[in-house]
Length: 240
Image (cartoon, rainbow, N blue to C red; front, side, top):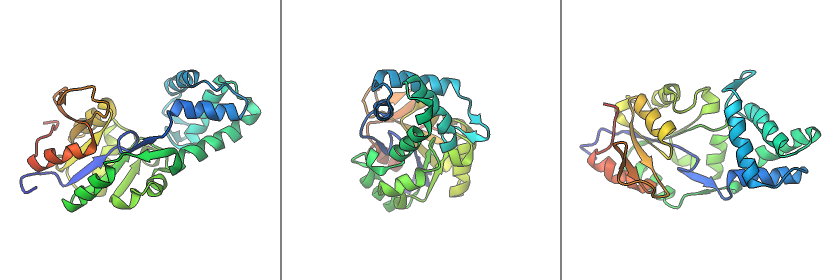
């Protein structure tokens, strides 16, 4: 590590550190079924995509991914799936219950070892994610919240990846300059390009193995332990 300029690692949350046991669209379909709607994962996926496309980033002061914003999102999705208006509040509450429960998710196998390794290397660790304000409690319930130095959810800071503002907040929290930080995530648009635009180095996580060793000049890893060789040799992409 003596040759590496990296002093902190930022990690995305969903599909990077953990993922749902069941496809998100199928969870929505199951909830819709509880309240008299259509139990159709494909239809739910389409409804979710349309809701994200149609809803603005902020609604009556509620920023995207906040619980208040999700009330509008859930309403559109469940309406499409045939849930009656009289059931919407209860369906929303059920959705929040499910998606804020640690039991809904599984932590990827290598994550405990990765966090332990980063701690042993004396690196700051931050979770930076487009998520609701419930992310810190969720991470705590999953057993990873106390293994990182800070957690930043977009709903809390009213800025979301790939916007530079959320990365700026993370840099402020760790007290480091951008070139001293590496960000890792599973989205090229939000994680890689967002980090690079903020001057932060980046590695792309490709768990499905769809890409070779690099993508658009960015190092590609198959699991999170793949960042360790890059940290030790200081070979990773930056915006410079």
